[in-house]
Image (tube, rainbow, N blue to C red; front, side):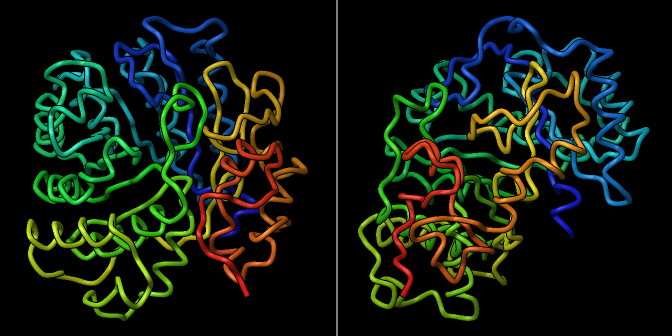
Length: 368
């Protein structure tokens, strides 16, 4: 796919309204809609414009806040499907996630839904999500979505509070029949500023663990952790045993890899680690609740506003996005032989140095 012409994913933060108060929330969600939220007519115009990306339009991922709190959700989804946009939803697990509305959305052609699971235990997940009983509600919701015919993705934000439960989360992903597991490497934006990101060494451990988890029948994708593609390239065709010594991996990998095999047995299939060389602004495009467009949800650099500008033109022509797609990076990322397939997290480069084209400090690799 030509990422200069069109992204593969457009994330639309349809609202910031949400009943949850998650400790790491990028959107800093609130009980009601934030001022300036796109109206129904503005949302309909946006989805029609996104349909102009071309013969292979991007997947529209409608998120929030809680996307289910938009009273016009069905109308917006219907309009997106009418112009040929595949639609995926990323709702919150709240009382709004009911079978009736979900059946209507399935009837409109929504095929995929992602839910967040941030711990393998109720104690960890609920400490992060801030709602007692939310772990059981989330597991039940994942099974219900599967019973309604949706493809299910589990989203996990990895941080110090849950890194020791990643193997257990992987076992849940398999148990609920999810088709994919998307792991977010924390970036200090929104309420995530108060959380501890993992260090580069632990990130390397997690990348190797995720590669091994991708052998168990579900795809593994990452957000703001593109170095996982480098790890996948290194390990393609290698055996699982002996990785710690071969790659110099630490305690996080050694413990969680062992637990993964205890829970799921020996790897049963080929790896399904996402390898498309996307990154913030290359294959990824984000529209906020108020119409401002960004390279991604974790990179708070305004590119233009879809209320007044064509999102297709913003994506194709903005100088920053063109530089990102051309891999015009500084530091280690600029010297790295994986700079096109990986390129580092542009959001983390900006958060750490103020330069969206700088190096990603969360990557442990030092190129020759």
